[in-house]
Length: 144
Image 1 (cartoon, helix red, strand yellow):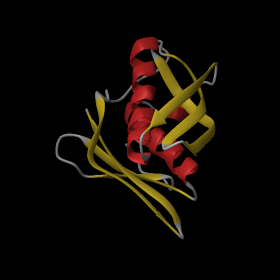
Image 2 (spheres, one colour):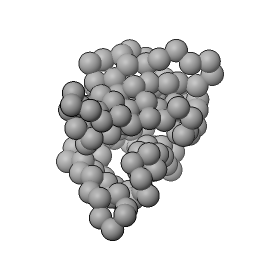
Image 3 (cartoon, helix red, strand yellow):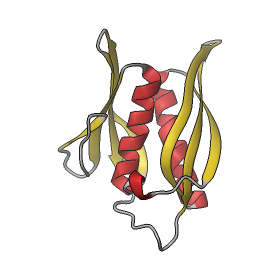
């Protein structure tokens, strides 16, 4: 797992911990998902053959982030979907709920793709979303 200018991995005893960055909330959410994806596979090798629109809700931003990352894992496990890119991610706050929509691009897992680690679950442990003048940073721990 290599860190990039969009995210960095942090030493953690049994799980994987990382921080993702963005100039706004949407970019930071995309980078948080792509960091989790980097644990699983090198997204640069995944072809964009399949397109999926997802809709996620949450009672607050942490819950929205958790649900977003978990949805990606469910799609991976249930449909053998490998993520290449996330586009058009939009977050809205309506009637005390947060809503996220995004377009996932990827392919079905075949012998053409070599996966790295298996992410079992997203956790709330050490989850943090910080917004300031510089942008947004998100800290996530996933269970391997």
